[in-house]
Length: 203
View 1: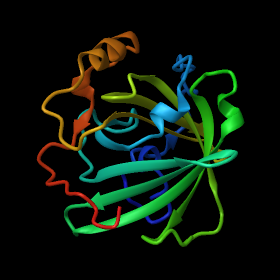
View 2: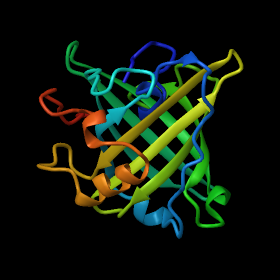
View 3: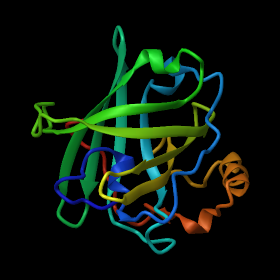
């Protein structure tokens, strides 16, 4: 998760670095019959991350948590990113239109911006983040893909593994099965173990 001041927007953006556009974004299968209420209840913790533009297993030294609320026409997500090396938290919020889920497919665009711990925007402009929830069982794990082809010819992409607990003893068996189908291995991902992640008192 790179923490440049301009890109502390969302867990998935933080996990990405831009490279010259040599490939296009992968057209990966999204979770079908997606249960919005089940998914956006409780917290999700980022436990593993992989960006194809970085060496496999690169650990970027941050801890991320997300929680959400379902509004009348939107899902509002709030992200807390903790940097152990400097003992600081950084925040962002994202909005997803509920009509994006009308067909029950977990492929959507989230509009994200940086905020402070009280939710006050630090940057007014939103950044559009295309996301695909590849698989989830809602109670234990989620596998998320982020990718966007930028106007300057750069590609931003990352894969994230999320958990309902901050430091799970092991990755759910389904995760490795899904990764294998994608041509990936768990060893490609950097784990947060050993980073001294801690709960955000403001979250």
